Image (cartoon, rainbow, N blue to C red; front, side):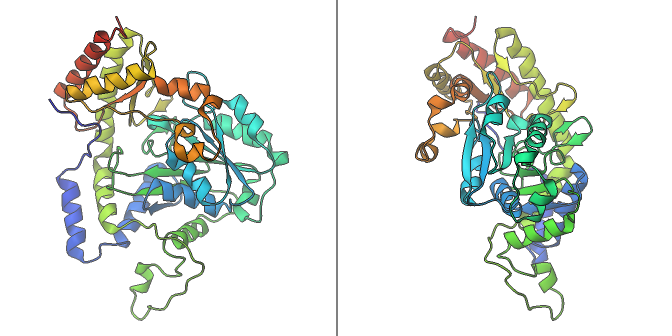
Length: 404
């Protein structure tokens, strides 16, 4: 049996909607993108949403609209993918990396508190695997340090009056904490709709934000539209009106818009999304039941008031070394099952080593990484495939004397 790691869940509805767009003759940014943005904001409960080409572009958009740049500092966790950190570098700010807490994938709050200074403009947390991070604690830290916060000449920074709390919500579209959905908890939240995500547009992302006193949501949306389309004063919808060809370039911006083709896939996914999430929950709970008997360390995706997306199923093997873990991945691959690791901490990557970061300074992140395996979970997975993964994984661990 061959089981991929995370294939997209594409059905006839997605094909029909994309076909309609192709037949319409309007395949780039247009009315379907606007409809998708409206549906995202309704689903999450925010005033607006902007659809972009990726979560990375969305995260960078948040930093740029906050006016964060040279001379500023932004703190991110060590345990994440580069897309959390690279936008900080792109805008010219100083990247600060915080270790995670012991036996946790979230930033060590005691270390985080010591890293904050008058140059700190934002903290970016990560909703790893679809589990919403502890934003309450991050807001407490931001408020505690309000007196030392020095806003730059930026209206949103001044309106917040504190460090901005930003969510890398690449995995958590559809997750909720009590009655609030991811995307309406942090000040700004970036989502990924990449092909491997639980809701996909093939490539793509979105940025949402909580309404800020004194700041008009429409103004934020307008600025993000400029950011994503060269700083052009009129988008394609506006230029399409009779005689309305003329436009201006307000500043030399970027090209990171979403297309109607992508948005059509997203609209179809949204119609089926709750069923897809429910299937992930069923598979997650079966894994939990099977693996909890063997002393493996598992993430808690569905513990009230948390409802995760179940995007990733991460397993830590207490007895395993990094070499043991890598061999288990090979063992699983030889039996037709694709596994992965989420993630290799940033200080282990050449780009961040070259900036002076050293994994020795992030022992908790390394300890999380060294014995972790991501095993397949996707909404199209059958019961038979689910059982095969369970049986094979347990067998491989026993063969290597990593569980009894």
